[in-house]
Length: 337
Image (cartoon, helix red, strand yellow):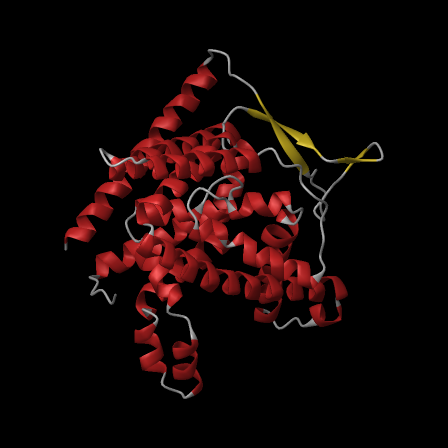
């Protein structure tokens, strides 16, 4: 599935990677939705499916060009580049916006998911069967059910971290199932998506200025180990899920897409804009992370009153819907080339 891309297409692919990285970081939002709506989901799944024994043989034998072509390297490189950029730059802006304009940000993501539901549903016009309706219902109930799970406590055991990596990648491969929200349920959201990433950022900054004192910092070294095991788990899960989903799409496309649509519908409850944070408490004391911030245990949703703030939130829902429709338009234009 090698695709010749113009410079503008390459730039847009990096931007899509940035969008995926942002979506994967937000609990309740799935990066896979970005891939699905932007029109490169099947190429995404296909490319990671190609990371197999044949690709490994090319790599071990030093046939790097063959390896690069075999795994659709140009696509993966540009997409991963965008994801990495988002984690170390744009996601910082998103953190700031969430701290200042939380309802508006959630409203925008809520709108994006509504737009995604509309987009995917178009593929089923006049083609709904009993089996696909059942798959839709099962996916919806699973998506809703996950949102009511109580989060576990943090666990930095490296084998558990590896397992977290395998599971977390579901947000990239299965639209509607948020990997970051799963991490929150497993109790390791702060550890894996905040503390370990920040430790890598600090370590790179120290190396640039020639400061290697971090080698004698057991806490920093442990966080770096956590990040390595989490990354290895994520890569393992990405290849495994990609092969599974590639098979399902090839042999049961409508049922698979109906299940995906159900997961996305079920995730609406997670990203409902109007909710209050319920902080984790142990022995009567609020729990805090390593940065002194209160740890969120869950969210309590409520219906908004008719105020100016509510009107602005509704406006941002419409903005989110428009963003998805714009992605759909660009994706359709790309597929026609």
